[in-house]
Image (cartoon, rainbow, N blue to C red; front, side, top):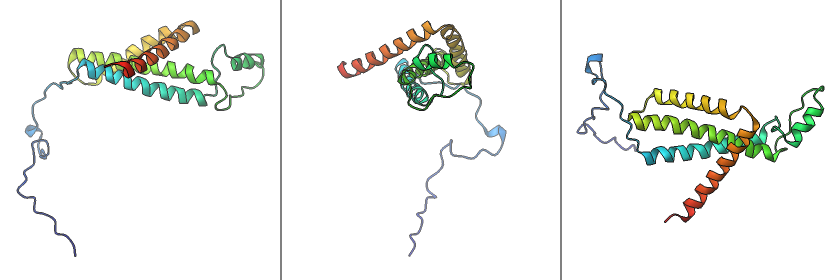
Length: 172
């Protein structure tokens, strides 16, 4: 015994559900308001930064290349004339933190710039993402000029992460 389908002929579709059959029946082009507040923007920066940090940490755990100035890098420099031998997974704990900080900050810069442009323009569109990519390019070109900047970047990311955890657990 099958259950009969209920009659839904009395429910009319909304404007969004109606099928448009001709280009003239579409609504006029309207701006795409973002409805993004500063709180939503900064929350997006924080969550994507945490995601990027996690992905960077996973990359660091399985990364076959040693972190500059580490014990593994010095050993590979001594074997420079020989064939490159990748590091085994989980062999360098320093690469986990190194890449976590690097990836997390790059993702945070992208979301900060593109979200800031979205808030300033009050629109969500692809131009925001283009500004974010340009911001990441400028940031990474500055950051990767020497290892000193990368190490201070990673210290800042760790400090911000620890400060965020403390604030989240002590704020009223």
